[in-house]
Image 1 (tube, rainbow, N blue to C red):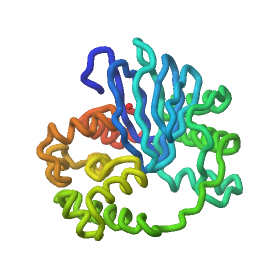
Image 2 (cartoon, rainbow, N blue to C red):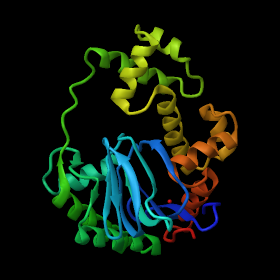
Image 3 (cartoon, rainbow, N blue to C red):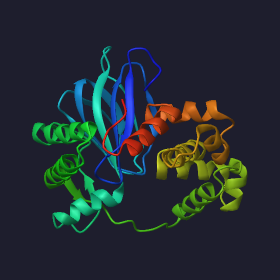
Image 4 (cartoon, helix red, strand yellow):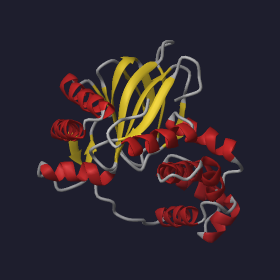
Length: 285
């Protein structure tokens, strides 16, 4: 649960399909900072309006509209009306979506041409599947979720462009990124990072932001939250996660985690572990 009056959010694991987290939320004042996911983020607006920045544009989505964000794509999120917005989101791992695409004969991990999409049929299927997962019937929840994913892919998926690999300035960015991944709890300064990849700090900052949509320090905090999410889901306590990942303390972790995922680390951990313990029921983003 959230701790802001008038706002409610909860995370849980899909009861019948491994590799999918779910969020049901009502946000009014909460604002998501610029962040990415290492999963897809797919959902449907149930009420109100959400605005979010994604791929150089501001999107405004309302009741019945779909929201689709691809992995590693920087985006934000905030209310588009004083009443806020209610939505249901699912966060399927890349392998889950890839398998659904293969079921349809799509050879590649799919991309999506639009993020905010008015498609009542797909939105209705996604909402029905999400509600089934909330109620905990493993067979119907997994069946409906696969049907919803297949329908979404058949209507909106496209092939993702091939990654040509690091070339020119991208080589320094790739090496800097790998160094941040390796030194998650004890990162270098910007000057040390630039020296390690043999470019100037200004050049690295500019190239890194162009490649990832975030400067190195924000990219690092985003990566820490993604790792925290997995450690919390595995049962580690928030205080231990904060120390493991280099956050100054638990409040530091909580601040970044909530800005990115919309719930506190403790609420996320409780929801995921409760769903796992119950086996078929969700606790009550």
